[in-house]
Length: 424
Image 1 (cartoon, rainbow, N blue to C red):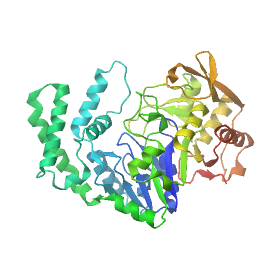
Image 2 (cartoon, helix red, strand yellow):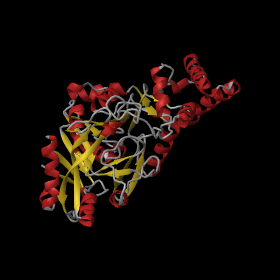
Image 3 (tube, rainbow, N blue to C red):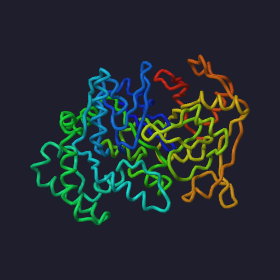
Image 4 (cartoon, rainbow, N blue to C red):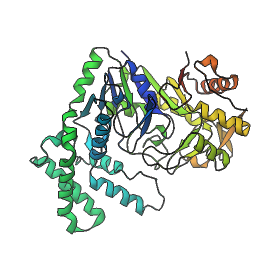
């Protein structure tokens, strides 16, 4: 048995979907554990690009049972459209949706936009209603997927709809929209359920069976370590726990079963939205990284902020998540940067309040990077094995291993699912 957890080590967009799809090749079950449609991953298989936000990346493998776990908040419209897109591509989705997962309502999206609008210091939310949906879950008024089966006749569901509307009215203060919102939510629940209902079930039974039979399971995390609401750059975070522990909770698997935690990073850093970013570049190097790496959000299309790799944050992610192996993507992109500009930098410590530190402080916006430099760049064209990589590319990878104390297992050298070097 192997239970493998795929975790983003920085701020998301590191290539978790590609890694999870790769790891799912010999898995019985793959689980999307946390987050909502604010997450996005792009996978290239047989030269065809698939962009998904809620479906696990394993959905492209029909022999794998793909689960949306109870820790996910589900946008019914997005999920319905993704299922249709997959079917149109000729894929029969082997999909199971937890009846415990909560639904993102139209009122959640409107509240999300409203709260972001009134903030003096913007968080950079995607406006997908994720925060309010998790808040409703905490208030015990969220509607769960299993309740779609008979939402119009259920007094429990109607009570939750009423509570959601009343909660929304506290923000908008307009009693005349009350009836409108009740109808709007009811119509929303009914509009998409025909497509989705066949996939809803008690997924814990599937997971328990896989564990009992020593099957391989992949848990696919969303977002990343520094968007975690407890361990990230609060308040510039998401509303769930996208750490390894959070992924286990959101999937329904205890930590004793986990055999591998694969931390996914890029050979450089990128971030979408607001928040501290010690190694961010505001010059032509940062612009060139964005262009060569095509650093634009899968979900929003927003250009990502780009900068050098921060190994202080990487090592901290190791401790918080028990990372046992790295997947380092965009080695090809960084090599091109080195060839164009003559040098590559890596952050190895911070200057924080006039002293040098090697940890991430709570007020990390006060920390500035101290760099190690690597001369030149490299070209990964035609490389199939680790031995094929240029010497300075291997030196860069091995420095990551030495600094973090964790081996690099996968090296991404392109966008396709085959553009991966396995380092034995």
